[in-house]
Structure formats: structure tokens, C-alpha cells
Image (tube, rainbow, N blue to C red; front, top):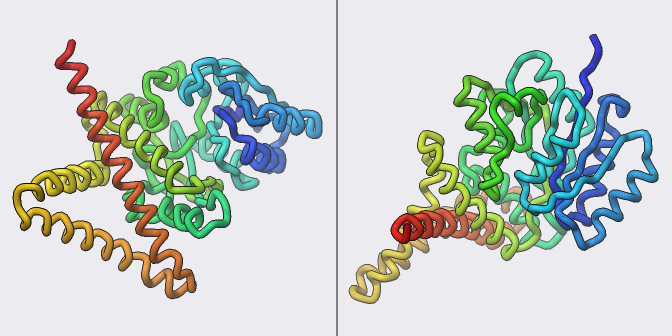
Length: 336
């Protein structure tokens, strides 16, 4: 049986620190190089990313790699432009922060040929953005159920039909069936794409044997921006697809809302202010209790501080972004 051709699409903006590790990981895939092409949609990087890609192209001409411009400078438009400029029978979407295992492409293609799913993907192994204690703490938090809930692609070891997968691999004709990535969403574009697939009777398949490394944010400031953006655009996604909401997505905004209400109420009653302090303390002790056995077992005392801080930033930023998105949407409705 002839193997299908594969186009690996990658949206990119200022990823000079990670793009080469991704390209090197693709070069050593077990899938034949002659059947693969890499299409990078670059949003006019200014940090030397395109020069780094150029070096790879000149050093490894056996693997076709090209750059296309992404003038809108957003991920979904980059994905759509990359697809439009690709030729493969199967599309595999990757991220410039990722580094797939050597058999990533081969296993993804095999799952599609076996009919396991319309869009198939695997699990992430989260690696730190650098070797500081806070970067390593962020990596632990970003792969822990307390931090990310039931997002199975971050910690599952069982194959299953799921709501979404990171990135994903699918046949080219699927785009013609369900449409391109939604360019009105600045994030959550994968989830929205997978929601349309499921609404049309398709299957999203998670295979834990399809593995890749993903580089987490290196500091709390970058983590805050990332999760605020996730929360903000998640509301826009849920507004369009109310049935897609999950319990874990409601907890952060409810937590942020409760803190805000108790803070305001504290100006009128000492008991309410005491309740605010109590809620914060209980939350902190829960996070410390969750990570305490691991910190002791692995002799990583810094996790007792870094893990609670990282998870708190993730929850508070996500919840704040979600609530602010609701408020700004309601304001636009009233003004219109």
C-alpha cells in the first residue's frame, strides 16, 4: 500500500529559541522524508526565526520546507494559509513550541488509515522554558490535573474518543467538509475546529502513543498572559457552542468571582473579609497538600512555592479573562 503524502503546518511568530528543535525533530521522523513537506506560516518574525529556518533549509534540502507570510499575524489565519499552500493528502498541525517524538508522523498517519478518528492527536510531555525553579514549577503545573483539569492530552495514558486534541492530524478533505479554522478566534481555534468535526458526526481520537514535547512558558508574567488569553477566548467559544462547556472550565471564573465579591464585601463587614482570607488560605493549603508528596519524594522543595504560585496564576488569569470576556461582550450588546 502506498503511503500518503503529509504536510506539516506550523504557525510561527518570533520562535528563534524553539523553531530549530522542532525542525530537527521533524527531520528524524521515521516517516519517509520524500513524502513530507513542512509549511511554516510566519507572522513577520523579527527575532531571527526566518534566518534560522533558512539555515535548516540549506543544511537539509532532503526535507522540503517553505515559509509563507501570515499578514494577519494570528494563529488560525496562519493555519489556513499554510493549508492553502500545502499539497499533502494528510495535514498535521504542529506548534513552534513543540518537538514531536521520532514516530509522531508515522503513528498519526497510521491511526488515520486505520479509521480511528477524523482528527487524531497525542499527549504532551511538558518541558520547562528554562532551568530556573519557577520555569520547572510551571512545567509541573501545566501537566498536573489540578492545574489543567481533565484535559486528557496532558496526562492520559489511555486511547479514547475525546473532545479535543492538541494540534491534530487529519485528511485534507476534512477541511472542505467542516470548513477552515475560525479566524475570529485568537485562541481555542483547535477546540472550535474539533467541535465542528464532532457536530458533523466525526471522531476526535487521542492516542497516547503519539507523543511530543511542549515547552511551557518560562516565567509567571508570560504564563499570566497565556492563560488570560485562553480564558478570554474560551468564553467566545462557549457563546457559540454552549454545549461544549465543561465543569472544569467554570471553576476558575467562579473562584475569581467569589474572591472579588468577598473583597468588596470586606469593606462592609469584618466577617466577610475574614471569609476572603480563609478562602485564600484553604486554596493555598490545598495546592501545597497536592504537591507536598511529590516535592518530598523527588527532593524538590522549590515545588512547595513554585507549584502553588503557578497554578494560582493559571486559575486566576484564566478566570479573569473569562469573566472580562463576558463583561465586554455584554457591554457591546448594550451599546448596540
